[in-house]
Image 1 (cartoon, rainbow, N blue to C red):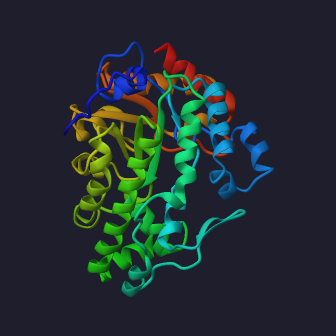
Image 2: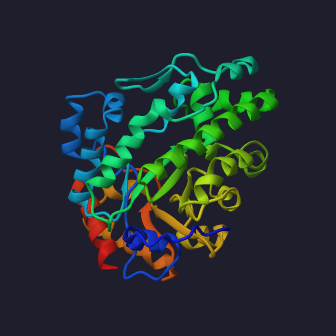
Length: 349
């Protein structure tokens, strides 16, 4: 594993960036996936005025949402406010976010021949609003708060392309993978090249690090991950990893953790389905890890939130390289006071 060079930029010396490099820190840094979302009244107020996709495509508002969230919560990093799927639009997918149903792709990939209409992303001009969001978010925050760019992983984005939206079992995706292996690899290779360009462009726009979200790959077992996914995730991450820390996150199957590390990432995200120490051991203690409180814990009483937070910190064992996060994103309806309790507990150690 190659560690990216550390620049003289003071933004490289924040708690978060030092933890990514497994350097000693005064306390564990904390940020939360989906930390700006429907659980916050400030976010809901903005969403009453603008649709989700429009919000993602309006850099001023997207930056405002995240900057306000960082200030409200007191977290140690700001992930840009965006979504996994707008990257698919310039690749020829017809994307819509419908009220109550989430993302819908109106021209899904269902047959091997359909892969040929998924266009190569030659440049990132048509998603330039994301880079503008990165720049605006960076400009609005102090140097001690790094900005995290992100993208969906090739498997997860391919799943949306094939299912035409979300799925419980990703049945169509796996059927396509098994029945049309050559077309599958063609599709994922196209997506991986797009993701690589997209992540690098976010770093060029001012992000200090990036995260790859493989939100749905947990539906696969290790053998299928190695055969159908690993080479493409590795390709998507490689160029960004030469420039900056990369967080590689997948949810749903702890058996994939060693393979995630093999695919790449200086930090491996761990969800709540395995305790942190065992997950870190599976990843390898030579890498940093991120995680891994169950998001549902935030619906418990504040004492339980604090206790469970401390248990995660204890399982980190004082090793350098732990970034506190949930095992997935903050859920709608989560009490804001419990999020604040979690953050306070992490900062107290």
